[in-house]
Image (cartoon, rainbow, N blue to C red; front, top):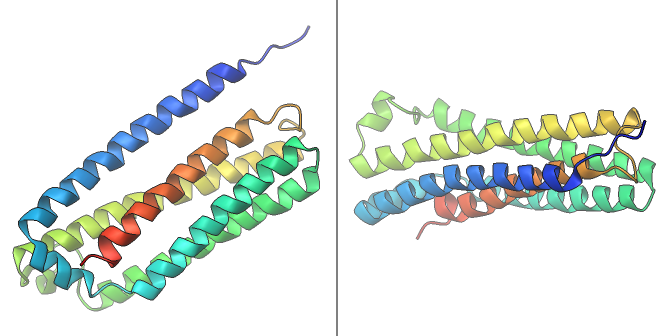
Length: 198
């Protein structure tokens, strides 16, 4: 018996899911814009305390990961399975690097007493408190998406190993790629909002 897979349905389902993710982050971006309008000077001062070099490095890391992911999908479609697997591992390495950099960045802030509800932060102006609250919320939520995306990519890798994702049946890897590109796109918006705020 031949199993007919609904590729169109799988792609449509992924696009609908991505739309809900856009709504989630879009709402947070609107919240950020509202508070930036209310506390422009405080946001500017607080933004200067973030490490632009680490933020820029993470931007390069995630853009590189998207490029590797796209190459992996293309390699699989062309039948270059081993190359596709290596490129997926490269994508996962970039995800891990992003999380390690973010860990050190958050650790430095926490070490200096700048974290939600800390006495150090609560002694600051209301706008700075809001800035760092949004910073932890939005970058933390994004970090969670990086972890989930890494899990999906790892699962795609396992499916390739088991022969369930193949050059003829690659919709799961394509959908994983779509999710990963969204994760990267969100960071491309987060980076200037928090690190380059004027």
